[in-house]
Length: 187
Image (cartoon, rainbow, N blue to C red):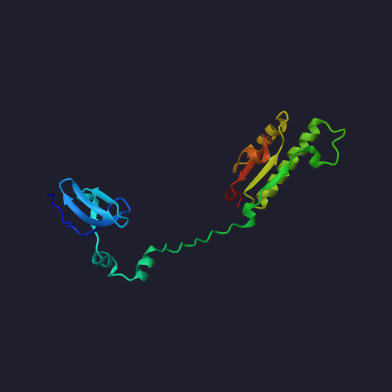
């Protein structure tokens, strides 16, 4: 006979399965149980655990049901207040430098005249952004042959506390430059 703490007549449960039954036979091959559905099954002693009403009630006797349920509740999530940004921080000045947006008609103007109007507009808008403490602006110059873009970059390099880069392709396509103004330098 195998050594076990189980006896014939003990109510048992199978550890890794949802099976309960009563021990009907104990021998060297294992322990035989009969389930409540009258199935006869054989298991190793280490696969079974003895269950009785006292052991089940002792598990929760020190705690009330309310205590057990309160332990299962999720704690309330902390709310974090997000720092409010001013509308000024969200605002991005977009300056379209296409000549048709700047003058009623470009008829009879030379390329030199058009470029001067575009660069003067860019300089004026940049000075306006600095004066009004804006942090960012975007110049929309288009793709073209790159003359306006290179002149714009030449203008921007004259300002010490300005950085610039290609603007978001998803928003502007290829023809835009994003300018960041470090405002503390202009205080």
